[in-house]
Image (cartoon, helix red, strand yellow):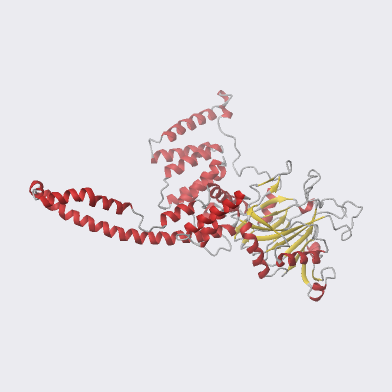
Length: 547
């Protein structure tokens, strides 16, 4: 308790010291810095205000420096006139004792004053503001994470580098383009991961923009150096040779280029004489040209569904889907004002409730959740330990019904509409997805090989999932079920519901689902995982395993 109090006091004192130069946003962030900015659009918005504050400070700094420069110019004009007269007849000039004295004074005092003026931070704020705020800036991990997100979006939605570089994305309000430096950095991120496929694509894009005349601090020689090696690593020896020769045309003395040219020509000669060299096949990398192999067995199907392709429901099955009004299991509230319900899918049965959460409630949930958002974690199936993962790019927070009437009201609404007891359910989880935010295919319930998945809760397995959509998404961000080919699209104010377990208690493996990467926009959701305990009489067990 003492250490916590000391930390709070020091944080408060630091905030008071910064009050004169920093806005309220910085005071907040100085005591509660966030990490993993790229995993939440909600937290990234704070960075825009930070940048705006720095820009204001920078403009004040420019004005002050311009004023300082005017003073320096006056000093220069004064010294220039004195120097011109003095150097014409140095001895005669210094023969006057006043001139000799003033020379001593100028060099000992006045030039020192000028030095202090030049070195002085006239704005008395920008440098200190920048220094303080820099510790809350995104990290290298954020920049790399955002770069990987762009590459992920490119793959998932079949976008080429030209489309992304020109910012021609669906549903965009703010056009944004990539410079040569940006394309080069994306290629370098892929190169660092030994992902030569994407290295080639982005280095080629950088080279195209340079060939089109774009001015850049990155030169063609540097781009060709990376590009030729990435091409070689994918087994395309002839293209690697061609690119290396082009590099040497621009810089004949390039040491690595000359070495690579000799090596590539040596390998080609061995390839042309395979019969003479039994080990020649080992010389050229046999990496398959194309995307690196993923860890997802259903990646192709998952990405097709994210694009709106893939399995479609037959007309006969579609006829079995209906819209209806729900009285929420004879709930007094919904008898008077029934909820609008529509079928999204038949097996597993997925239903959507329309206009089920108001804009005011959504705003309150986001207000409560935003200060608590932290990088979303997953439970390691082997160790059971919560950890971050590259396949879940979002931030989440947990809200209890005890802390605000809005959360209590939402919990009560879920209970009335599902007919399930939510007192044993997990707290309401709020999630905000970041750049290319996604959650790859997973199960909400604990499988047989994970017997201790929810042991610490003591409430049994996750029997059902309730998912609120708290924002519209301009492009991407669908909830897809790869096993059956279902795709559910975000629509603000609606919620979807499905059972994870059959009535026998066995897991329904067709509920394996994923949150597709957000292509354009910000995706906010909140979900309630309902558990088995308390449902014994609300959803009685059946004897048949799949009933």
